[in-house]
Image (cartoon, rainbow, N blue to C red):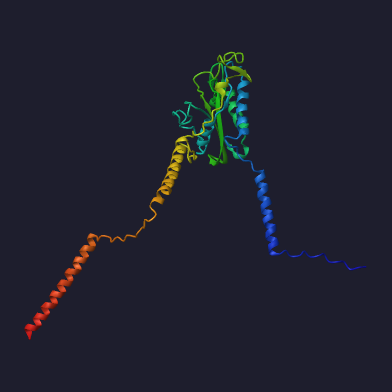
Length: 320
């Protein structure tokens, strides 16, 4: 019988091989964690916009009792920027600028608002919006009363509203929630609790004259047209985005034109003065008052010393 062969010993890796292996493992770990991470959508992401706008219209078009004058909703960039700007504060409080002129929107005043906060990894626009809509259970349409808070639901089904803009912001902490997501939707015109949110009846029977019925809602081509407010951002947003409006662009072009003209003038004038020799001029700085006083004091001291020496010489002569 042959003696059992010993198991082969693993060859020791060189230091360079160990480092390469370690970097490969680190790279794979970072890559896998990046692929699995769920990033919150940007407020101007098309899929995100379509998701929450379509859901708003779906819920509005299927209200009970049926609505005869609910308007079709479309996206508004200024409302989404206002939602993003307030979300940066990471506070679960109502925006204090919604009623101020041109502070929440360049065109509308009296902006409506709905807010949702929860863990970042649990956020979806559908979860947040449907949680607002569930407040209908606490609202009595016939009596126009709420058993608890139903303001979010009333804003979603407010008849005059036809513009919406939302944004979601990651926050390290809001209240007791760590790594929170703050989801805000702004509406124009905003809703109120002063009356029923819409007029019940057969769908689209109380639409405006030029409206047509779209998904059980009153739509209008002019009213629903999307306006991109390119240079408008909330004045109170911090940090403020860097935006160059038409005045900024005009000043920049004007400076460039002035610089080019100066260069051209220098090049045109220079050939007419070829023999100009720039001589270095040496300027002697004027003495300050303190320097003059010090100089005078030194001169006086020297005079006194000379006079003392003369007196000593004269005294010596007399003594002889």
